[in-house]
Image 1 (cartoon, helix red, strand yellow):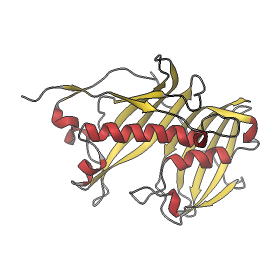
Image 2 (cartoon, rainbow, N blue to C red):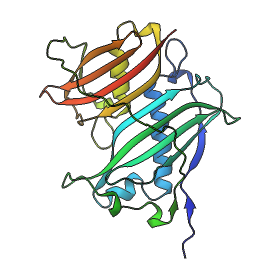
Image 3 (tube, one colour):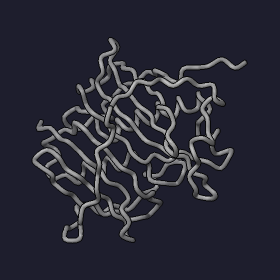
Length: 251
């Protein structure tokens, strides 16, 4: 009989000078990279890594991600990142993250939502048709958020001028030949006027349509109030690629 295993892992994490902005605060894209790296390590350990899925023509696709800064992370200090999957939904798979100091104090919390897509048929794989650890995994039931996501509705951008126009570069791509999801966080903050006067306290990115090499993305900004913004990225064909919510704090 296979032994049941708790599907939760803690791995070392550290933020270096290259992870920081001009104010020595962790860049949003680099926070998401730490999440992504931890998820890759753990997914492989529980039989759900890239190689495990691609053998059956499947890949993970992230649809939403959110993080909240509890306390700014220090530079060049050993930290930990803990990650675990939530119980499966009908079609989606959720995963939470905690970045903590050596004493276990939470500095950043986050969550993400994923689905599995068949790369040949382009159809979603039902959660019941996939199991971690061949069904021998035990879920950690801790949740970072009771209400995990903001309800983002596309806003009318027809009368707005684009803030940025970005053509997807080779260095933007991941091994699925899509623009890596962490790069949308950079496009989002670069779209905010006077962003150098702020730090991002909370961010949610909804990934709505993949972007490929040499696709062009135009960003549009909606200011909800002095410290809350939404950014949408729109491809040349008019399809919305991503929708970001940000809560900022004055430096």
